[in-house]
Image 1 (cartoon, helix red, strand yellow):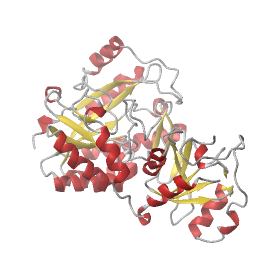
Image 2 (cartoon, rainbow, N blue to C red):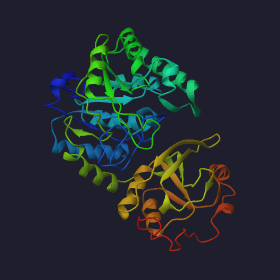
Image 3 (tube, rainbow, N blue to C red):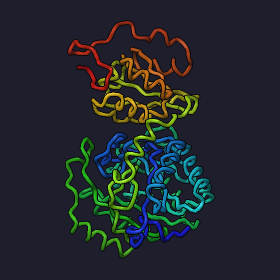
Image 4 (spheres, rainbow, N blue to C red):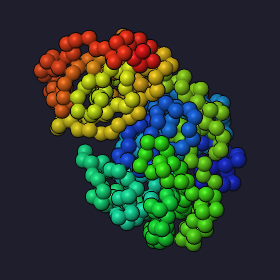
Length: 422
């Protein structure tokens, strides 16, 4: 393999070689104030967005077909739509399978670094040659303004507490990584008024650590995020930022804010070669068996009760069911109403790591599609905090089963065809 053929790290390679990101990592362990993840989007071009979420097995089938269409792909990476190491099992299994199938392929990952350190030894053994870590601050008081929360070792931390944990774990991973032969790039999202004054501190830190390059990325406002009202910095502003940062570390200047399912050359539309294959593979390939699914999804109006019809769901609350007490993990956006069976196939992909979906009610068609995908739809009513322990202990669940027919405000029921309540 020739590490010079990585189009993201070498500007001269971007016109010759392509890359593909395999979207096998849906969960994230931090909530950035500028990020709103989407798992069924074909129109937006930014990190955190994908047309589908794949299992490792699906991703290999997708890659095989994609390589036939685009043999100039030189790099396979995992970059989300969540964080690769918040989904460590999926990420590492995928990398192992790609390395076995394509021994000479360049491999890379892009991560926030929170849970990277435990995986570094195997990443090196697999010859993952390029690793990108997003570092938006190096002082807790600045980092606290960039993130809503940080989840580490089953606990969620807010403000300065979360920022300190994130920075400590990033430093721990980076300190270990720089001792290897891995090429290290740091992504820094530049948000005016939030961390643009902090670039000198970041540059000094990166220089001291000895990383290879930095990519100062212009912040992009996204709807339904705390930073949605902040204006995107203009090209002149970013040129000045990069000029200043180049005094500390080599700058990457050709980034195109790739999606989690990017495929082809940088700047080439994802749909140019990858989207059709991706959608076909995720909807038709067999899903993981239930025993590999540690999560339960809940549809709720206010986050306290199981009390919403599946057809009305705008988001799914994800909980981990393990040997201790169940705990909240994250929210995942639901696909928009419409689309018939495709909507429920998308839901199955979004919830591919969930064993059960708890709803107030659901139509027969989505129930059938989700069941075929290994997701049990449970019609229940009651407090989430009461129902989840009952599911975990496999006892006394019967008292939460729905006792009356659900009807929406319109009084017309639900079609079960992906249109919500009609």
